[in-house]
Amino acid sequence: MCLLASWLNLKCIWKVVGPNSLCVLNSAIILLHFEFIFLILVGISTFNWTTYELQVSFMARIPHLYLKNMATEEVLTRKDVLPFK
Image (cartoon, rainbow, N blue to C red; front, side, top):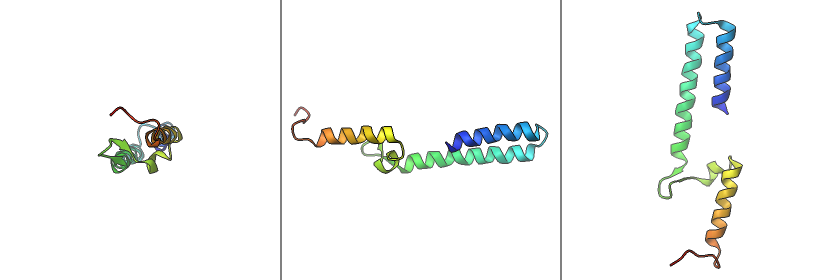
């Protein structure tokens, strides 16, 4: 969401200020780069390296992933549905 908002902000700045004002444009591009770095850091910090999946706390913000994960956990914890030995 933040990334999309920044991209739209960048396009609005370009239309309003014009291509001659590089100072404003450069600051918007720098902010866009910081958001990329932030998203990468959030992804790495919430990634569980033993199971190769995102943590539930982060997935709770994404409803369809959270519900999918809860359904998988429910199936795996049921005694009547066990994987082959």
